[in-house]
Image 1 (cartoon, chains in turn brown, yellow):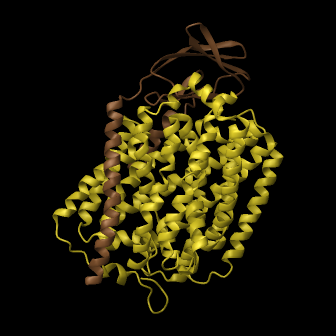
Image 2: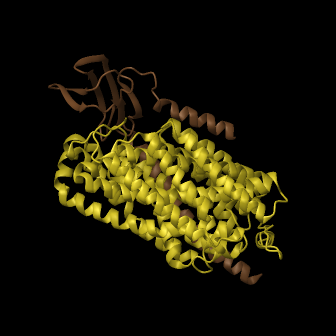
Image 3: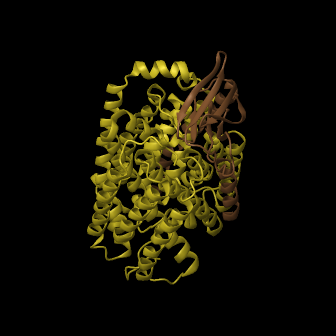
Length: 138
Length: 482
């Protein structure tokens, strides 16, 4: 069980460790929740510019020395990003597609959670009383 | 370096770290200097009063996860992200009646593992120990990571250095003082956290304003304001059950239930939950100001210190630094102490040296705290995942224990086979949900599957004898524990 958990943990961590990536990568993929972290950990350079393609052309999202950025609150759609390092383009543009979970699925999980919360609270209140009277009787 | 745009000189950061490190280590030594028995060291003599009880429950639950992960979830999942995080308070409140019952049910008990072994038998106990140890380790790693991230975000000090200092300092004062030191430092840390968070919230509202934050989010991040954002709707109850699972199973909370004086547990946990409820909302709100301030967020778990640093410069950075450092320390020491108790009593005495005396256990506890500190450091060196994803991964494990524990404490039905099946199937399904759907449903799925299995308990006769719990864990006449 311990070994299994360690293997699973290792598998979990792999997507977050793009050790050999030389260009733009998706370091944290939350596309079904509307967020992504784009990273360029091993790209050579001191100053980076991250651009996003919009209807009116390329729009700058970030300029500076950091090596990652997190975008969130994105609606459904396709998003194209391009990185430049010290003024030179790095690799080809990266396209990310955001597709949120359907609302029906979300409400399904909500309903399960709400039901279980009511059941647990009721059990703790009623179960506590029952066990008190059980012990008093004993 | 993750963040290149820092506001605090490294020398100031080192000065604060040194001052607080000395304070915590000195307090740990001072508070623990009269520890004589294993009861003193592990359970603070079992006579913690109401003020310290509320403070320690609250300070332990206000972790780096509250001050750094709540903003991360607000930044990733919007309004419901921070509201959902605050539902973690429900875990403390629901544990209140259980804490009272635990104290009277097992007056000489030491760990949550004691209860599982006596209630469900050895197989379930071992499954539970794996879950609990894995969770504790995940929590310890997340705390070490948060320390490194915080110091890097504010002062640009390399992640590994900051993480190392936090882990070493907390390990040292936990070694010196045991649970008494942990609870004493928690009291001071609670005051720092509460005052700091309130000041920060007022400053953010005054400096940026609701209108500017709302306008920028609406233009750039519309889904963060969407009250029907599907992932955040799924997250709401997931976080509630993650918190319930953490508290119901973890020895951090059971050791406090044993340590609080009689009659204190119920009120202390209830009040701590109430006081804790607004903190994630206040902390999370800070993250929503990031887009309006044009801040780049390299990793979402760094968003709170980045915003505070940008908004308030050096003074804000120092304030956040002190608050999060206190929150980190108050939790890291608690998890170290409680995990050490679990290892000492359930693994060392339970499996390795069954005849160990209390004096030997007292010595072993020191080495185990040191060993856990070292293990935490080793596993925190590579920044392996974001704080949120690491924490919610452990949610799949702990939520599977909710129903076996609740039913086990309050009902004489149910046996080890059912409890084991509930934990294994719950954990497996939670992990499946984590990888196929997202981190925001792992605990919910795990708890739901575990509940379905435990419902079968109500088809059986009530056969468990409560006296087994009371008798087997009482101190012996020579002062040692069985």
